[in-house]
Amino acid sequence: MHGIIFDQLHEFTTQTYGREAWTAMVARPEAARSTYFVGEEYPDEELEGLLSAASTLTGRSRDELLEDFGHFIVPGLLDLYGVLVDPKWDLLGFLEGIEETIHRVVRLRHPGARPPRLEATRTGPDQVTIVYTSQRKMCFLAKGIIRGLEEHYSESVSVSDTSCMNKGDDICIMIVERL
Image 1 (cartoon, rainbow, N blue to C red):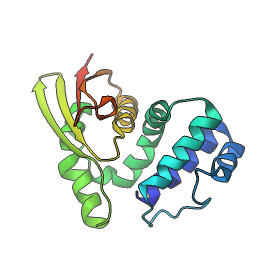
Image 2: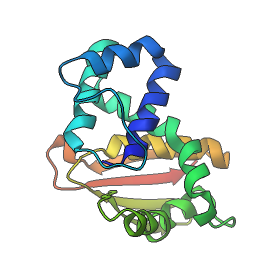
Image 3: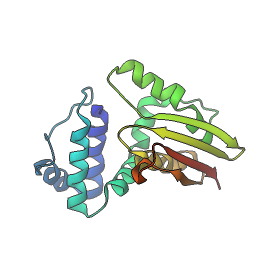
């Protein structure tokens, strides 16, 4: 997992739960270290350890934390990758273009990076179907990012699942519909 995610998790935790929460998380046995660098790569298990520690400390599930975290990181990701975003896009256009723009560039700049594969297809004038595949099974992070994009684009959408890896399916399929 790329260090930017750990850096943003630190920011999310301290802003949402306080500096003491981060200190408590990294002190737990599930955490591998207390410091992460933006330009480095870290094992996925370290993020899972931090999520487990955060879940224990906050009483929130991994999926709830991932969704809130996804919502939180949107401004930072847009600051970092916003130059790749077509100004003509709306929220659904952004979802359609993310794989070929942002994820492609992430993979080129950081050969070890493995963002999820997102096959986003316009399935109606106000609907995009996303096929999400990743061994990390962090579709709730993607749902949180969609929530953050709602704010960025001042649009409202609903997100529903037709399949989910966290429920035993092979892939996640999300239907995003403009309200």
